[in-house]
Length: 267
Image (cartoon, rainbow, N blue to C red; front, side, top):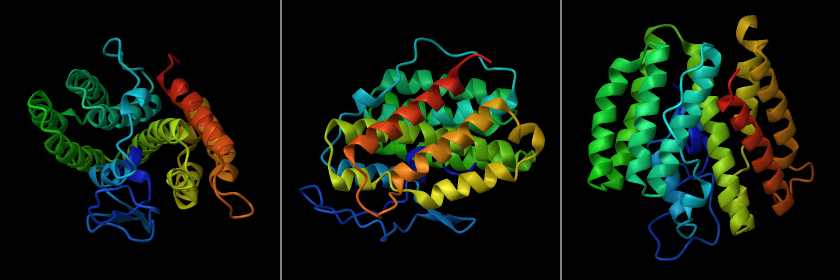
């Protein structure tokens, strides 16, 4: 699958600094970034490294604690979107250094990949992620999560589920955007808000959703997400090319949160 969550935030790495950078240069992309359909996306661990330099955000505030392992819905479109949000939740749990939540999310991800028929590779990676989390080897967990994304994407391509793969990415991006908006809103700064400036990615998702088969494109949940993307666009890309305001950050977070709740709701 195309990378999800904060992996879809087009930001670059700064050099190692003792203090947070005065400005994040989003034109300098890391070496590990991938070009997918002319969209440049860094791998998740690199994006989190940038966010860490903003002053070690309190990611616990952005978590959605899982009360139990959710049951997989019957609709594969929703399953794919839910898998994306769950993988994104895994990255957030890693940033919060919450080993129990990482393990719980890992079980949920396995259930969802099984429902999509791509659990074989996910099982192998899940074991490595759990072991790294239990030893609190957070750099190791980040690395394994990066590799897990590639594994799931490749497995979905093998079974000709490219459209579902894109929905996994979309679900992850929405959950990641929601979480980032929470972090930025807690301690607003223009540079932090700049991380939400992703017009190219919105164009990508809008284009992909518009080209999907009618069965998926006309799904009420997908239609709702497409409208949400249209609502977010003017907030992340002001007409005057100015900064993203604190009010806009709050609205972006609210829209994303509403869509994530819809993805996680029973049909």
